[in-house]
Length: 475
Figure (cartoon, rainbow, N blue to C red):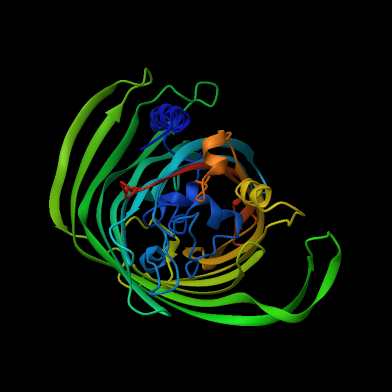
């Protein structure tokens, strides 16, 4: 089914998967200590990220829709996507943390998604996806005087956290009519989050590590199911456009009629519900000496119960002129009203969060006089993207809401070469694509003397295609 070149691509992808698995996390983020961590809106492909994380209403033969399972389907009598797709994406992040007193830099890398989809019939497509739902990585400390201490000693407080929750999804999309499709994703959520908090008395400022550290560690292991139903509606619009043609003698003529150029309007919606999420939490008290050796480690509590993960609703709309341009806009609402874990002093979670995503993509046109040349080059055309994202997060610091906004640009670049057999066939298989998105953003409460995160992300993916099966005929 796969050519030698595609096998080589798979080997390279697997190499990067193994490499990035040893570098989990996106760099130090103190805000990831609150709630479930970072990454709740990074559930799409690199195409979505280049478009400002928009795209829950998109449907394409060349890209997967991981935001809305209804986008995997083929509309009845409309299209026939018979391609197998393998898409692996990575995220590399560089970040600057600063307030009025401190400034530091950090970086990290993580797998964004590993996805595989294939058609079961002309209307039904299924697939599996492994992707992070949240990422926790924080390491920060501060020093403050001990209250009412006659010796005037100070103390150093340190917070360390890591881990996250991953999703293994089974996505399904079915076309019901020529304008309507539905989908359902069933996901198994698993992972653990560890948070450690310590304090250390500083009796001698010249020897800050003289005393022992006393702290507590809390580890929560999550496992359970979630479900995401989705729906998508499409309406084909037309715009008349004149064209010119050449007669057999090479002379050009203006057409006496116009041909319809389709523009598609789409609207999509999906909602993710978490049920029966099991959480096992253990709390330990420990003492660590100046040599970084744990001298006392005692179990305080171990409890098992149900965890609340927030329900997420996503709505999207888009306009697309196939082979030319696409614009898309999404809105996401997350309900945090029942969540109260991992909240520390003076910080809290708002009852909800809202995200707005806007983006588009553009495919440059070329002039080809020969049909076979046009067909050949059409699969080597690059696609360019840009977008904007704005999120009012659920996190509140001293009564100030944390906001996250970013700008992004991206592109898709076909790679590889074709042989003469491919160029002479009526069906020309798609070349593998390298997708890239560059994102620059900031998270801040815009309050004085509070921490601001400025981040830069490089997001890469490789997509390879092939036919599911060829039906051979013997004459």
